[in-house]
Length: 153
Image (cartoon, rainbow, N blue to C red; front, side, top):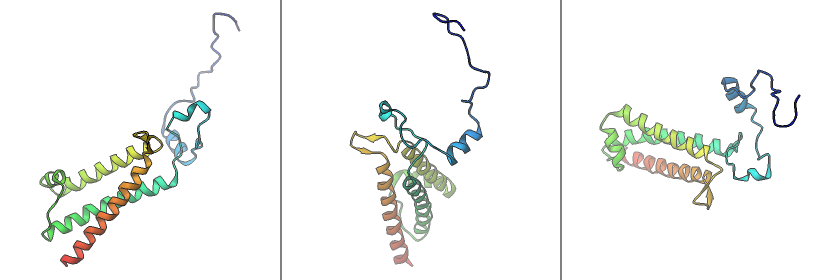
């Protein structure tokens, strides 16, 4: 081993940082990093572990979005009108396009919000709070649609 200006390479050939499906499964089931390692890492917002409440909110919001799509189609059959102009335009392409677009947009939004859950929005509140807001809004929307559906029956 030589000291001074020359640096001697001491690594073996195996690189532990390779990414494969084992990495995904291991990271999902046995994630360990729940807090930052160093004091200077407080600005880092991405960790291996998310609170179970985020899983509940993400899953619940997706299920409510599915219920919303189903109830919207039922209400449109019974004479109601789609109020969202974007979804109205998508709906003109067909039911499958409407459902796929609605669920894809919701899933993408949920993915982004969970990924950025520890960041701050407008330097005021955590982005994860937006998932709670969207879950609550979807719950109110589904209740509204159920009331209208029972009224029309």
